Image (cartoon, rainbow, N blue to C red; front, side, top):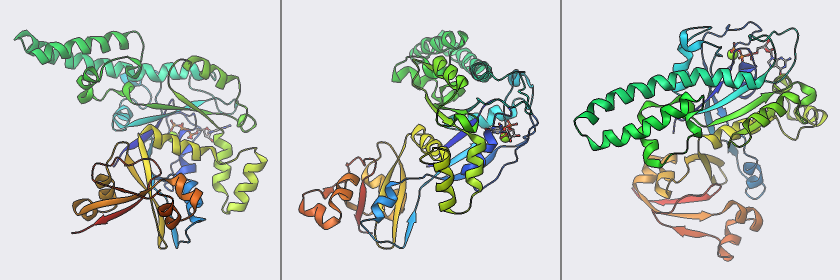
Length: 365
Ligand SMILES: Nc1nc2c(ncn2[C@@H]2O[C@H](COP(=O)(O)OP(=O)(O)OP(=O)(O)O)[C@@H](O)[C@H]2O)c(=O)[nH]1
Ligand SMILES: [Mg+2]
């Protein structure tokens, strides 16, 4: 399940500042462009309020959150693909991720000059995307050359593959990201093995000044306008404020601070949940007096596969799963009540686990 979400963007926009709010590993922040020399990897807890709801109905010794891997990657600049700034090295780190959190500078700060001279998040998206598109173009061209040889001797798959690749080529040549090309599943498979950078799902984060945390600002508006019509999700986060919240030790202090800032929860909590969703992950729960715990699965996993996330023995010796829906359990209040109401389901090995399912695995090894 080692899926990874990368925090990416132009240099000096607040990526590491935001990463440090969610991760126990701390990366170095600096007001100098290109000062970051390595990516920071963090195992980040996925905040899930449902765990505390469950605890209201089942006293327990501990609550265990599930986690997601997030990596903070040093920023790119115009020309990175040719070795500008920190150059190519981090394009490789981006390639290793499964989804991207693209941080955009949407705050003014005269003390902190932007590498391209002014604050303009739409230009930054274009700058960043172009760097990735250039690399993707190289990958597509390489595969085209490879398939052309096979197509010449009449290989049918190669001929089909070429048709798909040419669609991608044309699309990317027009300064578009691979993810926005409408293609069939079969055509998409053709580029599976070249790991296109602009194919990765993306979540945009507008890093705003504290006073714009709840309202947004003109920069955020320009980003929304630019991304209109794409499926992209946009989050507004005040990085500097989030950093202050993360510094606070006690929960009371944090709540007080959030209230003053007009926020219901830290913005980075939304960010982590967004990353989780972007990776196509979902959660099931196990609930008992020893622990209430959230577990991560891919969408579409069956009950035995989910059992295997807990322990391989549970998958090997899987007999059946007793399933309660989260909503039923919190509405009815207990397993017994669910059973009486006909809301405790006994499911076999083909059952596809739903988000928020409470599972009790019966197994025998
Ligand atoms: N005013 C203001 N400054 C911020 C904010 N977020 C980050 N900064 C400052 O911006 C500078 C760069 O922040 P980093 O988090 O290091 O930026 P980065 O995107 O990781 O930069 P690279 O790793 O070089 O790509 C630091 O001096 C931060 O204190 C913000 O929301 N408001
Ligand atoms: Mg950084």
